[in-house]
Image (tube, rainbow, N blue to C red):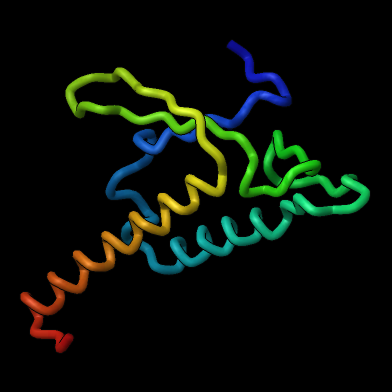
Length: 120
């Protein structure tokens, strides 16, 4: 099915390259983070004349970007290709990403303290 202009974007968290360049090359990772930041800075949900073109295909500039509808798709099992799709918003997904990053950073801290003796 072809996505219409107003259809929400579907985020597929499980369709990503594991062990790829972004996990190994600090400069590539920095560039990717900057690209993501630039994309969000180019989305202006409060633009008065609503004529600014965003880098994201279906952004409706009539509402705040965090309230934009998206669909989040997850694989609930590693031994199946079956996906579960949930309705969400950009704001909720950014909140999830922030929470998930804190979780990973806490794990990095434990590893660093226990394996290389980094002081807490």
